[in-house]
Length: 401
Image (tube, helix red, strand yellow):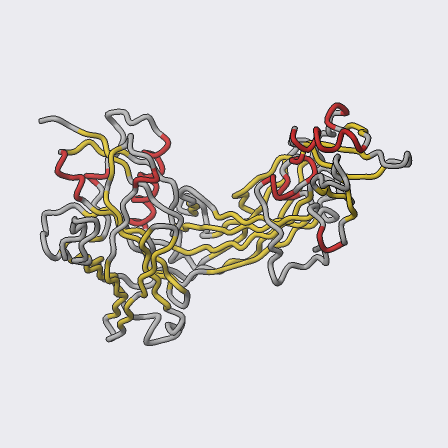
């Protein structure tokens, strides 16, 4: 029988950009992937998609509209709200009404997914099928003790570290994080260019107001991949200053002000093994001894067709969170970047402004000689061209604009 290689194109819900393979019959392209976890006391995000060929681009990933329910054996039921974000379907279940207290913490929970019968582009991708996860009790008694950083100048490395412990019931953990950081352009522009007019055939420069600067920017990112930690082979269920993220000295994330929001949650041994296998597959070349997803059914099954393979492993957890800020002062000037080569800065006269503008250069500072200006490539001057925006987070601790 002809075989095909397929891919899980997992999104940013709980596991991201994971690319395991599976050798299976062509008809298995109709198998689905369920992404997300039941995060008690939090908003939980879920996406349903189809397994797709390995050589297919991520942009071709097909998410499926669905009705998603979080159910408890204590009678709890919450239907997620379906959204269409960035051309993808996702479901958001607000579980903030579930508290870590008797009655709710001791209940078992499951996910129920009913695929939509909606016709999309003449096709019914869901088919009205129904899937459920196993009933699962919330995992663990984990405490997130500390989130810190250390600088090792000998290794030219800044490491972010977490410390946690549990009473022994939890030995396996998954984690994710979000990052925000403030950075600057290479050069601080005090001037900007105004295009030529009849009165000014070469164009002219004008001074920025303080709030109009293109020197300070902010950027946001989220963790990708499968992030796991375990204390299984340790004498006690404790991680002390566990380094989970590192930066080199020239990483702009730590150039001025950096913030990380860490979420950690305990998972079962089965869930840990499932994602450990997926992580192994995604980083391997796929030899004959690699575990394959068809042998990893996860903890979901099809109500409609019990023989159907369903991919995904739903965890039920009370997540623990921590936040850390790192300023350039705290790192003892660990961050530094290479100087801009001199040829990327030129002094020009007014009759050269327009030509330099067309070549992608911009003014940034006046020279004492009347009318002359220092210019440099736009990417050296405009922080937005380095991928960030001027959208400063509302709770950001610096006063820069």
